Structures are given as structure tokens and as C-alpha cells.
Length: 143
Ligand SMILES: [Cu+2]
Image (cartoon, rainbow, N blue to C red):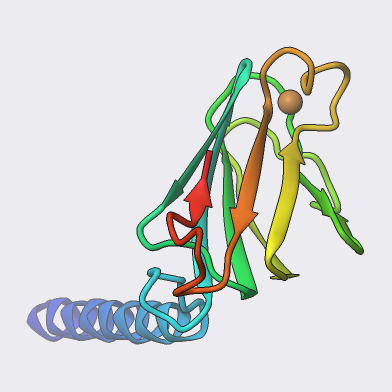
């Protein structure tokens, strides 16, 4: 009886160790963007009917990662459009979902909006302006 208990405890410990190991591996492979990488990083929050863009640093030219979260109760999507760029999330985001989209941006203005139904006209739209660092209009960023 004693030995059985001990073996069960050992198996439980092994299972726990396995879980910890697996979690560690998963978190290594699913490296999240923290905004500290070289790329621009912009957090986008979608809701009915609003689009909020949050960036810690000015957005300069180059690769920009948009992390888009649907905080609303309906499906939404994210489009960025300007110059020769026209990109969107492959699928609509369901409530609570987050996905990232990476776009190469040049100094220019880009429209961002939700293409679902008429959400764009209902307020889910914004403009992002990319400027050269040190340029004459260096209050780069979003408005
Ligand atoms: Cu929408």
C-alpha cells in the first residue's frame, strides 16, 4: 500500500515536471513582441465603434508590427492602406481575439480602418503618419 502511494506521488511529480518543461518550451517558441525590438510596434484596440492606436515610441519608416485586439462584442478586422500598401487580417477577429500583422511602412500617411459592414464610417478609422526621424515634422506618430 505504501509503495503504491509513493509510486503515484512520483508519477504526479513527473507529470508536473513534464508540464512545466512543456510550458517553458511553448513560451520560448511563442515569443511575444514587447515593443523593445527594432521594429515599430503599435497596439490596436477595436470595439464598437472605435479604433484605438497605442504606441510607446514614434513610428518611423520600416517594419511595423500591429498587434490587433478585438475588445468588442462583434467581429472586426483591420486594414492598413496607403502608397502601395493594402493589407488586412486574413480573417475577421472574433470578440477577445488578438492577431498581429506586419507591414513595411514608408514616410507617408496611411489609413487604418475596420472593413466590416460600415464600421469604418461609424468611427473605426484612423490615420497613421510615418515621418523620417529628425525630419522637419518630427512629432511623428498617430492621430
Ligand atoms: Cu468593425
